[in-house]
Image 1 (cartoon, rainbow over the protein chains, first blue to last red):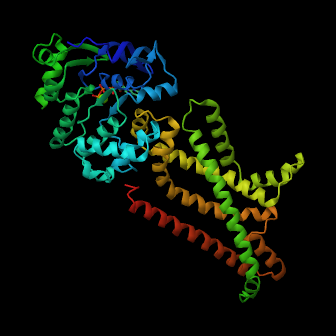
Image 2: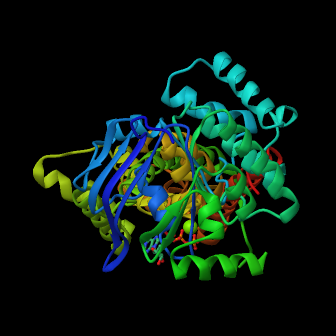
Image 3: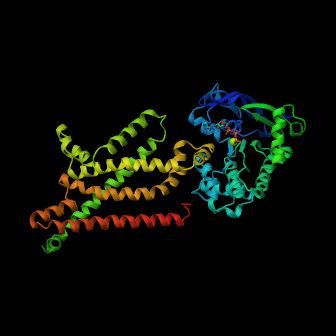
Length: 254
Length: 222
Ligand SMILES: Nc1ncnc2c1ncn2[C@@H]1O[C@H](COP(=O)(O)OP(=O)(O)OP(=O)(O)O)[C@@H](O)[C@H]1O
Ligand SMILES: [Mg+2]
């Protein structure tokens, strides 16, 4: 497999909300261009895990390193300015899209490059149009988010994240809020990204996507990574009983 | 006793002059109130910033917990004991502005907190600093939601401004009372004064409704 220096490097990551420990010391590496799919039952800490990777949640303990820069070292967060800077390297796509409701599609995509990277309006718009074409929505450039379908919103959200030219993309259940017929168009965009070599961490229940695209599938339960490996191993021959139970529940539901 | 509006008609010019002072004082107080309200409302968003939060909360508690008239008198009659003599008009603007700022701050805070948390998270995950995200993403959306409650606050401010007549400011209330003191036509003059306030508040209501419709048409409000 890939042997380069990991682009995401996590050691002893612990996170609690009050007395409730959500992540119990997680160790994990992601190599450049790797696609990691994270699965696990509801409440197992998948979202929290992802959110610790871009500093939306502040770990209690442990190290998180992104692209060789320390986001959190021994539970000590990076300063605000450096943290903002590092976040540019890490794109995030949310289950609920979170498009900026008062901005048109193109402004949603250009606001980051313009306000954060100081890119000119013309250049940002030119880049945004390229991204919109990539997600198949160039004709929606001037639409407002409220007028888009869920699948279109999520594709705009992906384009918005890509506009910052991130090194890593985090997806937190990107298709869970979508009507079933709209899931495919979003997964398609993600497959293209993966094939272009984007490093991705994806929380999803789309097992076909995982089977097809993931290099590694990680199973979380109770705030612990209980098992990880290539999809063909995890799906056909898991070592953990809890993985089997979870997969059975997912597959019978689908 | 028959009604006699002739003192109102002959004092019409004075009343209008007074009305324009009322408009001036409320408009200035409004600007001050909005600026203070914005600053204090934002200052109360993060309790973990203890000092700012405590200062802002203290201001809101004191202002909302004491009568406006007492606040105005403290400024105008109380401060001179420290040799701080502020002109009456200035006291009126400051007093009303500080008073309405406390209420505006609650409107600002409520509107900001009503914006989905995901908007801030999406902005921060693009690498935006907190302040930039607040200015470019959160506040523009919150502003639209502030308009109806702000309208109510403006109207309250216009009506509350009648109290500044007690600081020797020649607003419409004060001018009316001068007319009464020579004509003894209290009922007629107070009716005229009421009409002036009613026109001012009515115009404000209409203007705000227009603004809201405009924003709605622009797709700013769902
Ligand atoms: N901000 C928070 N405050 C308090 N508790 C939280 C917070 N966020 C998450 N939790 C708790 O942490 C645990 C893990 O939550 P998390 O959202 O990471 O799980 P998840 O695996 O993403 O679940 P789901 O599949 O439902 O999205 C849950 O018990 C949740 O209630
Ligand atoms: Mg989740």
